[in-house]
Image (cartoon, rainbow, N blue to C red; front, side, top):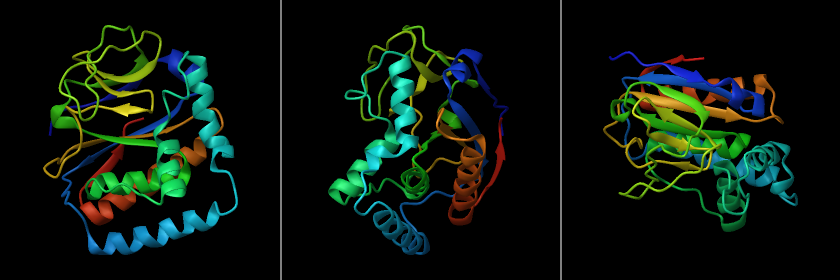
Length: 224
């Protein structure tokens, strides 16, 4: 297992980004798991009941990500935080995405908490990762694409030592480091904002790591 670390630039923390990351090793990822499907369906029903008759966009957790985007000059119409996109898809369209077991697990926790979660295959990351303000010269290949797309300076993003963005804001992950069935060594992101307490982010981090290791095996350590 190679050495790997995560660092955060003070300027990003000063914006109000709250972040916990973890490394999960020896994962046995699969397409799906019968026991998890039963658990997932139960949790989805709870989410549906929780927001029945309410406007999910009024959730202050989601509002905190919109505030962060405003601070760095990004439109919340064009750059929707991933947890808000999940809520919209599930509550407005009745859809919860199926990718693979590990991704489905962290998406479920994101849907429930409103926090931004993501995961990356460390074997495909160059060196270490830093959460920092972008310079506009980084390589960014969005999920589902094969060619780089221009990125603005002054955003916050997760960037590896090869100057590759692995996650832009909490909006877009990338194709090269996505988690697939063969992924064994995982970098996991649990991100909050000025409207979330440190304890809330920590609780979600514990939940997602325990759930992943329950259904996918492996072991985890927090990196910060």
